[in-house]
Amino acid sequence: MNEKLFPKPSPADPMPLERWLRVTDRAESGREAFFRGRDDEYRVFQDAVLNLRDNVIGGGTMIFQGSPGAGKTALMQECMEAVRQHSTFKDPWIAVLVDPSSLKWPDTVVRSMVSAANAENERLLNHASDRISAALKNSIEKGRQLLREIPYRDISVSGASLGKKESAESPQGLFQHVQPLLRNYHIVVFVDEAQNAVKDDMTKGVIDCLHRNTQGIPLVTAFFGLSDTEEVLSGRGLSRPPDERVVNLELLSHEESSEVVKGVFEAYGFSGSGEEREIWVERLAELSQGWPQHINRVAVAASRVIVEHGGKIRNEWLEQTLHNARDRKEDYYRMILRRCSGQSWIYKQLVLAADQNDGLLNIDQILNIAQYARTKSGEPVKDFLTDALHAGVLMESRDNPGSYHIPIPSLGDYLRKLTDNPPPDIKLTWA
Image (cartoon, rainbow, N blue to C red; front, side, top):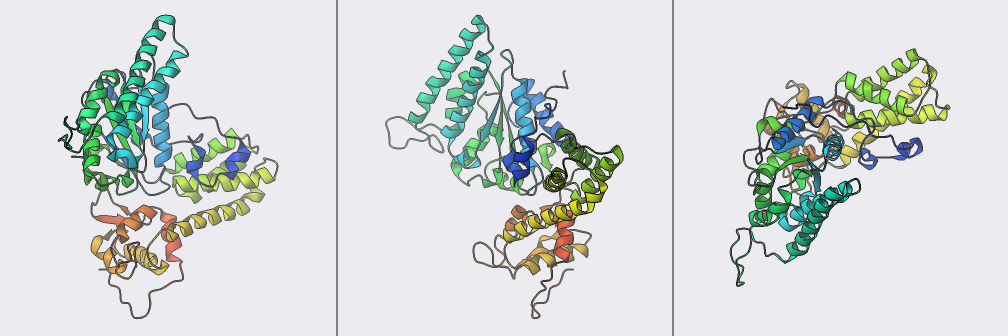
């Protein structure tokens, strides 16, 4: 067995420096030229595609979840690129990106898969011999025919008749309809922001096809989303999520963070003595605390200072750089709090309570504090935990299910320093 199937793709070319410095969100940059680390997480993806290659289909679903800024989209883009780079005429692979809102529409999901197959065949056709070209053109025409047919197929939750002469088709039936074409490919379906999947009976049918009843289509699905994605998908029809393929994305190691910063300096040709470069890398990696969003922010802050000084790295500019980088981190934390329910003192109390409980909070402790918050629905407590998870203030502990922690150490520091305190008539108990 070739265990080296799907090694990490070569680093992407960095975007022009001026454009990169204007980027305000990592999601704007596409595939990251400075992607480093996540070897254990990538191995989960690699094991799943090895099984798919060996014709183990159905039940290979992966879930990669974490707080905003944990690097989910960057990891997903690396995995998608690996699929694309591996595809050949003799062994075609397809990466299909599916919007979570479309999971309740089986025809949309199936059209995405067929369209991706056609796009890959078109790519292969540009480099094919005459003999291979004929086979590719035949597959493309089959795909086009399916795309013309799909809108006219009648689909229902159960496949029961909808009052027409013929019975409607279930999601499973639609997947079976396109199987004669798609069985010739290895397909990896990617769903980003999967926590936004709509709760609907049709969604359950589609997720069942993507997870278990693939109707003979060789596919595996990778869901990427916020910290409660596993819980959400379990309520959307994902039966028995595979424990070893549910991955929580947390901090990178100091070494991995340093490699990213080094990669930035090398990509843009910043000059400076080896000793000065090492000091800058060390201090910036330390400030990032291994959080991917912060690594990007401190690298941008550093690069702006370096560019202002002609692309040179000098220790005399380091403290100003670190000051600017801390400001960018605090901007990020202010943005997090704006996404949350209630006044800032509530989140200060969360971290103080966690400090007294070995860094972990159970649901009762959280709700005791949250009862004073007005949530998005306008009611106390309701949706508070979901808001906190989606904003990145809390994350469930994988080792202690039902317990929650602050995922970014410096976020805890920021919350502790907030000046807001509970109103004098509110008494909180954390035990």
